[in-house]
Length: 216
Image 1 (cartoon, rainbow, N blue to C red):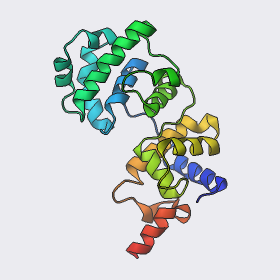
Image 2: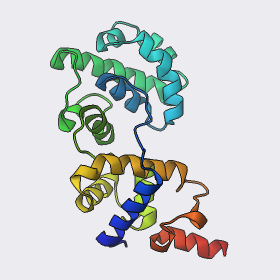
Image 3: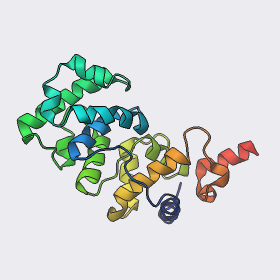
Image 4: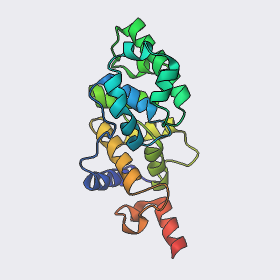
């Protein structure tokens, strides 16, 4: 397992590799980010951005989503995985925003998770990127990187991963760390064919060292 000092070294190296890491979901306001993040579950940001380019022209407010049939909304996001369930959740959360929050997205993670289809990861993405509140969302990339490095055990849940990273990372770096870990996992430490042989973290990486021994 990594030590806290080794984790700090990893963060610094990843920060050097991806100093400009950022949220790649295209959005202009908190509501658009909320919808885009919900759509991104089990889907690439590239595909989400392709869909929302038209979606956000057609729907501007929660009321716009509520005032169409579920069938029409499903058609609008049909190319995205789980589109039926996501359409249902988007309409339900839009209605809840209108009824309980005057149509505005609340800047509180715990409150956000009461919205239909909004889990802890989505809420963390929204509060950190839309409202500048320190948070650390754990998606598949962040989880994979933390476990490969030996920061966490493979059996650890995303919540355990989140808590460990937050404990060992200064709060002011949480949001940047989230983005940098995503970029590192998306473009370097990929799920398939990670670039271990050219990785500056290889001397510290549990799985990387194992992989290099296997390939010889």
